[in-house]
Length: 201
Image (tube, rainbow, N blue to C red; front, side, top):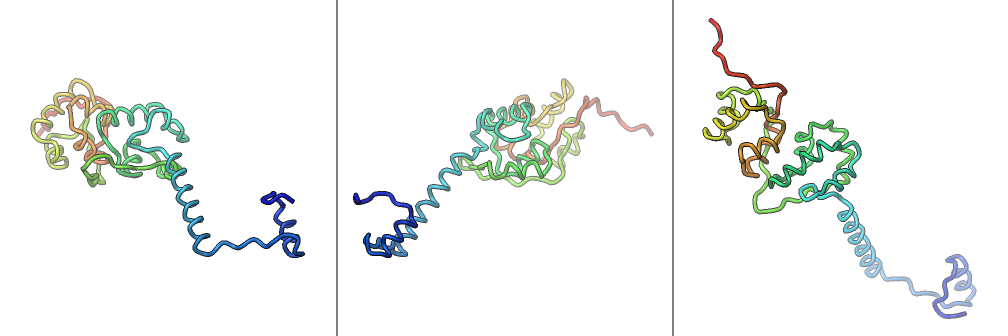
C-alpha cells in the first residue's frame, strides 16, 4: 500500500490494531492546542470579514440586513458621507427608531469600529424635538448648540422642518462630532414649527 494513502478511519484503526500498518503518533497536547488556536483565529477572521462594518458600509452591505428599508439606508449613507460615526447598537436603534428585537437580530452581523482619535460621546435618554422645541428648551437641553447655531436652526426650520440628522447636518453645516453627540438626544416631529406666539392672558 502506498505511503500516505487515504483510508477510512475505522479501516486504518483495524489495520493498526492487527499490525498491518504502523501506529501513527498522536499529536502532543501542545501541538493540538496550537492547531486549535490557529483554527479559532481563522474562524474569527472569517466571521469579521462577513460582518458589516457599520461606519464604512456601502448600500449593498446595508441591504443585506433583513427588514432594513431604502430610506433608512439612505439616511445612514448620508450621515457616513458627513463624517458621522455610530458607536454601538443603541446608536443605530435610536437613529433608525427601530424595535429592539429587530436590532438584536442584526447584532451578529454588525461590527462597530471607531475611526479617528475621538471617542463616542454619551447620549441623553430624552430626545428634544428640533422642529418644535422652544428657544429656551433648546438652550437648556442642548448646550452643545451655541447661540449662533440655535438662531440658524430656528431660521431654517421656519423654511422647512428638518427630516433627520443628515438633513440637520447639511443645512446647519454641523461638524461630525457634534452630530454624533446629538444621536439619541434629538428627534424630528412632523409638521411646520410655526411662529412662537405669546400665551393669551
